[in-house]
Each structure stands twice: as structure tokens, then as C-alpha cells.
Image (spheres, rainbow, N blue to C red):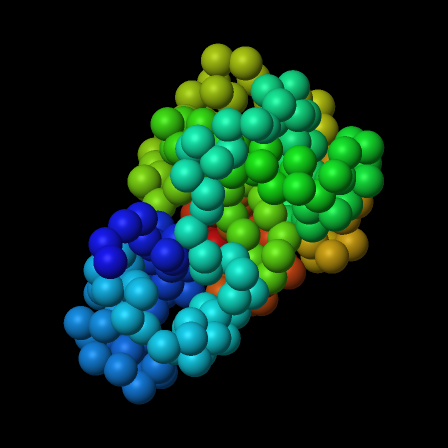
Length: 230
């Protein structure tokens, strides 16, 4: 019987891309054909797939099996309260990391079911803004969709913002600390990490692979502009 897809096709594809795996890679790990994986991502023949395949797919994608199931149709989530949707959106934006619906329910004094309904509505609403609700092992968060700006475009946007507004004092201090050297990201407070992230997004500092993920340095362009070479 034909009907709505049983699995969250977009989530499956997004997670595969996020893990930098090809359709062929997934097929090989699952022990199935490329066509089968393509069907999972396009909504074809979902009802014909064995349950064991769903569990293996969740393991390969490092996700909870329940996250792979398709979200309720719009009419099934119609009961979500707009105020709650706005609150859930604000909390997820402020936290900036995955959190469980149970934590959100406790914080907002509602049921977990209320939060799940709000998240379903939120996922539809944020898509038009280049965002999506990311689910992993039962937790949820708001992330950029796959249709995201390139790194160069992000750098350009941040640099234009700096040029128009000028750096904040905290950003200038962080840039100076990076120039002096001698510290690692793990030593920073949360506000300092946010500031450092802004400088990285602007293409002013970087974390070279050959040095280590925790070490930050000025980019070549900034070093050249300061006459420090390197």
C-alpha cells in the first residue's frame, strides 16, 4: 500500500552527508544494494524493508532508531501551541547544542509529548530559513541545513560585518591573545569560545590540522597584514 514515507528521508540523507559517507559506503556497511539505500533516501519501498535493516542503518548513522522514523504529518501536529513552539525554538537557539525533549519539557513545565509536537512544527518552519531540526540519539537541536553558504561566503559576511561595525572589545582581546599564542581552546570559558568562533568564522584565526584541533593561530592573511610572516 502506498502512502507517506515511513522513514525521515531528509534526515537520513543529511546525516549521511554529515558523516561524509556516499550511498555506496552505506550500502557496503549495510550489506545491501545501492538501490536499496537510494530507496531509503527517496521514500520508495519503505514498507518492504526488514526491521533489522532499520536497526543496522541507525547503527551506521550513529542515531537512535526512533529518530529515523518520519515525523507526523502537519495535521497530526496541528495541536502544537505557537507559544510553545517559539519557546522551544528560543531555548534550542540559546543552548546551541543537542538536548533531550525531557529536559525541555521540565524547563518549560510541559509534557514531553508537547515538546515533540512543537519540535515537529518547528522543523517545518525553520526550513525556509536554511535551518533544520537535528535529531541524534533522541536529542534535538537547531542546525544549518545542507543548503548552507560556503566557508568563503561565511568569511566574507563576517568580515563585512566587522568592517561596518568594527570589532567588539572582547573580539579584539581574543585576537590579541591568539597573536601572543600560548593557549588552547580547552582553556577558554564559554563566552570566550563564542568570541573565538566568531573570529574563526570571519577567517581571522584558524585551527591547522597539522598543529592540533585545540590550538588556534592567526590565518596567513592576518599574519601578512600584521607583517608577522610565517
